[in-house]
Image (tube, rainbow, N blue to C red; front, side, top):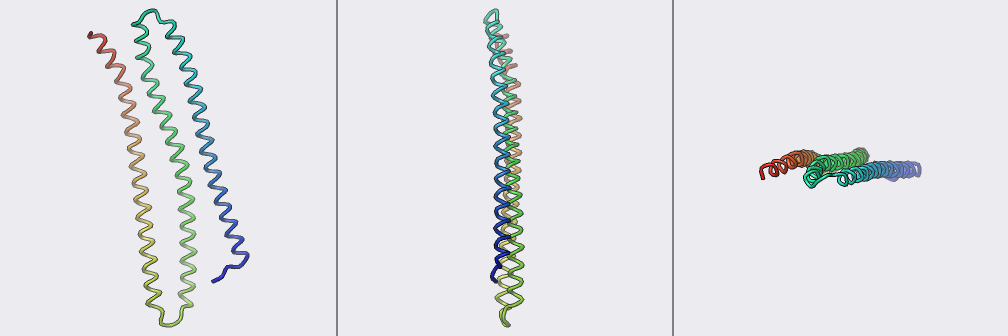
Length: 188
């Protein structure tokens, strides 16, 4: 089956639109990343200035040590928050890409099935076993693709769960660390 010039133009137009859509999604992800990094940099500069003033106004070493201990937990919380935002940006952009790719794969499969059904209808007499074997191969390929997609989704969900668990563990560790230091100093 040959394609008409109109079909070729339409296919190229659809491919260009897909490329532009993917590019826009990538640029939006980069914009979000830049905004996140600018906000983190501004916050870090403000925190540094605030902590420097507080350290310079400390009256003795005990007050300075207490100040250092009080800085650790908010810093850890900000790191965890930054990593969560970074993960959200990356996973959101990745999900957009995956959705577009999956829709294009579905379109290609539909076009292929339509083309194959058309060819099967016009196949010469006696070719039914070959057509049926090919249909079985296509069905097996589709099932394999679906299994791979399910496995990727499960792996992605597992990675997200692990990331959230690690972030919560890091935050909990940061919350307990200053308390442990203060308890040790008091007992000494």
